[in-house]
Amino acid sequence: MRKFVSKIGGQAVLEGVMMRGERSVATAVRTPDGRIEVESARISQEKKWWMKVPVLRGFISFFSMMIVGSKVLTRSAEVYGEEESEPTRFDYWLAGKSGKSAVDIAIVVGVLLGVLFAIGLFIALPVGVVKLLDLIPGFQDIFYVWKNLIMSAVRLIVLLTYLILVSCMKDIRRVFMYHGAEHKVISCFEQGEELTVENARKMPRVHDRCGTSFLVITVFVSLIVTAFLPTFDQYKGMLSFLLRFVTRLALLPVVAGLSYEVLKFLAKFDNVFVRVLKTPGLLFQRLTTREPDDSMLEVSLTAFKTVQAMDADPTIPTKDFNITKDYKLARHEVLSILKGNEEAETVADWLFAYYLGVSRSELPLLESLPGAVKEKVVAAAERVRDGEPMQYVLGETEFYGVKIKTDERALIPRGDTEVLVEAVLGLEKKAEEKILDICTGSGAIAVVLALKRGSSVTASDISEEALALAKENAEALGAEVTFIKSDLFEEIDGAYDVITANPPYIPSKTVDALDAVVRKEPRLALDGGEDGLAYYRKIKETVGPHLAEGGKLFMEIGWDQAEVVKEIFGGGTVLRDVEGHDRVVIVEKACLRS
Image (cartoon, rainbow, N blue to C red; front, top):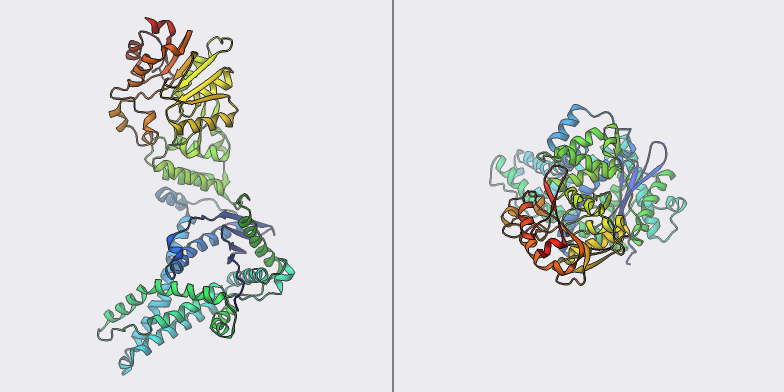
């Protein structure tokens, strides 16, 4: 008979339960003061090719769940544990050297030690026992299959002994109680009962898809797979031990993958034959589960219902545990990540200020910050370290007091360009004034002028991607701007009182020598041709009919281009930026006729 199998599975953690569904995962933990804290996340829906390959999918899933399980256990310990103590010198040293916290290092080390421990107990130890038995006169001559069977028997004894020993630990016994709570809630759902504490309490604490059953199945699958492997008795000393060990270790992926498929198959059916096969695993579960109390069932139900709701509704937001981190230690980690960046301190300030929603001046006063914020800052710092502009990482930048969305579709608006905007805003406004911003990029100039001057503003760019970003900025800020796809003035009709332009003005050879971070920005917005002046010449040739009588053309320039740009246009006024560099050339209509 085929059974209904829930697509939600779980794992017991310290004072809590993690449940994993098709599209989401949630961990619920009981805090020392009795509250239930929940952390949830979305699972990528990208289908990996190996998910359809039997055996391989089991092996990969096994190790990926080990990593996920270690992270969840650590997170639950942070929630249930006492407040973080003052960071030690070792904490600062570790953060400075690795850019990782002690917790991050502990997760990696824990997974590695867990794998090594399992290999030692279930492969090296059984092989070693048989190697010792070889010292007994006559044992070396017995049929090699019997030796392989003895190795499997040792594995089963080791597993049983290990479970009995760990179950004697107080904290582990509580984890086993939550393990039982996890099973009861999943069984309650699979049997069609309403998800309540009362109904869950009546369910068995063992379950067909338990990890304990997986371990037991692994022992028996290993017995079958390795039964006819050679024992290399022809070799003496350590060589025979190493050959036995290596051959069995090499088959570990096959054993794990096959065990996964067997567990999955047995969970789908219920008949006499299947029950016999399930019995060893269910018996071992009596060691790894305990009867939970109602408060534990409540925690398990919370995790299950969270996943159930999130799988059904993709709009439900994720949650993070309310864990605080030491600010100074977090900053030390971030600065370590940014090591080599000349502006590491400034970048760290901006990242922390942005994700905390505070000003830079408030940062020195901080003692702690939410753990979720720290993780975001660390992830952002890693992107900056890898060469991504900070403004792209944050997704925005401030330009003339306005938040402008930024990404790889357009040049990042910079403070130098504010000189141009300031000059336009300082003009006496004409009635029904019309402004045209060519090479608009992110739309920063056009949006600010529309918001702060209230004129009729049109913006153009040759890049469809840049125009899409500019439109998003205008819509987000409520600026009325008309956008046109055009190569300078090709698709522009009519004349304008003010024309602004921040064209590409970096010489082609210089673009290739720019800092790697700057080269992440669109080359189309940087490359001004062989001498950097190609676009100014094109503008000179075509701007005339589009600049109204008495109108002015405002162009941003490179710091050393003022005189040659004035020469191209036959004159003009030069404005300097805050650092004293030539930055803007203003050309009047009358100058264009000369």
